[in-house]
Image (cartoon, rainbow, N blue to C red; front, side, top):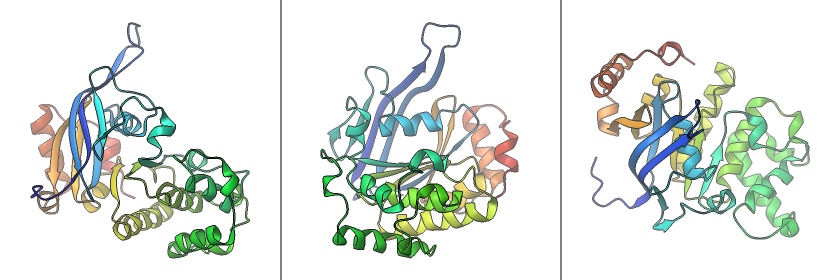
Amino acid sequence: MSTDNKKVLLKLRDIKKVFARGTIDEVTALNGIDLTVYEEDFVSIIGSNGAGKSTLLNIVAGVFPPEKGGSVIINDDDITNLKEYGHAAYSGKVWQQPSIGTAKNLTIEENLSMAFLRGRKRGLRLALNKKRRDVFKKALAPLGLDLENRLTTPVGTLSGGQRQALALVMATISRPSILLLDEHIATLDPKTAQTVLNLTDMIVTKEKMTSMMVTHNMEIALRFGNRLIMMHKGQVVVDLAAEEKTALTIKDLVASFERAAGERFADDKVLLSHH
């Protein structure tokens, strides 16, 4: 992959994360990650359980800081020490549980209003006017779920798939620099998961969004995105560009992981999942 003329969007340098330090439960989730993500990269991230995939996304999202010495730089801004709401101006995130990313007691338009203002230092006073509603309708229409005609519907009455589709629009409507997808289809049934995946691909392509997607499904990791990263024990052990990954099968992927990690890939859940 020629990266000479591509702009660097995200730089992670020496990212370490230790949980429960100094206790019997101490665990090193990330162990010195160096990663550069370029503008318009769509990175699929895969790895066995406990490899540090979600922790990596949470560091970028500012859910918690890396250990001292590590840095998170987006568009040349060092955001390492910003609080989570400070990171929100740079990154949009869709979580595994639809209930986390959306407020069930608020309507679709109220949820979108909050998302629209995310990362901006002001309340909801700009909340809902006709112009804003038109923006929301335009963002929802391509989903093909008729949500644009249901702006006053409470989000709690939507299905899981509709809520994840809405969460996607919420994560991208304020045009963040990077979209973070943390196993965002894991709790959906196979058919709905496929719909939400296709919508993800459509939004990412249409908006030219730089994205990082954690998945436990190798087939999805091979099919979506222009870059594939495999993590193991808190480190990136495989990093494949589009032209390398398109030719691969799941078997090839397992083999390259085992070569890089120096051990067998033992997570059957990853190998067997086939939505």
